[in-house]
Length: 44
Length: 358
Figure 1 (spheres, rainbow over the protein chains, first blue to last red):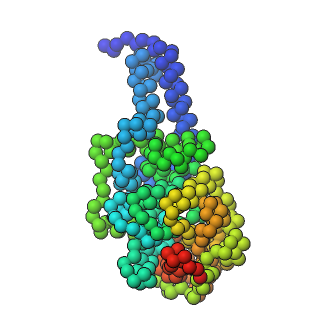
Figure 2: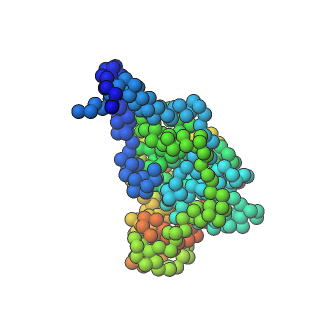
């Protein structure tokens, strides 16, 4: 039987949200050329 | 609905994962970065002549007479062995001519290559091919995430605006997990000398026709070109057009840093234009900027041959036979190398003895 779910602390959720926004923002600074060319060349 | 975050423990775990990934470049810098030579061996060979670059920077010893730094245009545009032979004959001793390059253009990449070699070996003269219109945008080099690591070259990035520093940090975040693997198992070096030479020559493009067409052997003896005409004589030189699309602030920053690097190491610096296929028929050498001013060394020479001059003896319909795309195939490489080498030798002579290159 699965363990009962508990509601996480809103502060922790807030921190996680900020980190995710930071990560998404950072990707916006990476040139699209870089991502597309490297995907084509499978350079990752 | 099943919640995205189902407990405090789960939230903390996600926070740790995301925060670690975002801060990994800094954490690795604090912990101690893996040796810099492993950066080169972490770049895929499909994206440049990396094993040869790594060997020349970190394994070969001794001074370098002429160092060429650039992009794939340089790899396919200049036969370094021919220049080395000619320079050896001129000097009466074995000369050393090296070339460092990665695919795609970017002065940040060229700064990095030049910096790494100057840190390890004494260099007489650096010759660089500067960006053409193939450099689109104004952001870090396509492969920057492979070789930019937090804490390296700090002095050279402090003057960059916030946006550019974030772009660099983004590249570092992207590349950090791969760099992390070096702690567990260092990247392997290509140790077979023949394979290093083969990968470094990009010879698979040598006998290739223009955009997939058949390869046609063409004469490779250049027309007689006065050496003096290969050097630019100021911004208004009629053989050069220095008023193309100016580089953006990011690459202009690295242009200045390249000039600073040359001054810091007291190394002679020159720039050389390699003709692309789109220059067919042009009577001037198209440059994006007046480079001596951009790098901050007003006396730095710019060498170039207008395509119309280089192909003076070639029928217009046959010029494409010297290229496989924007790059030279073996026809073009040999023709251009033979044409530009007398000017390179004259320049080296001048830099070595303080005479006139003409």
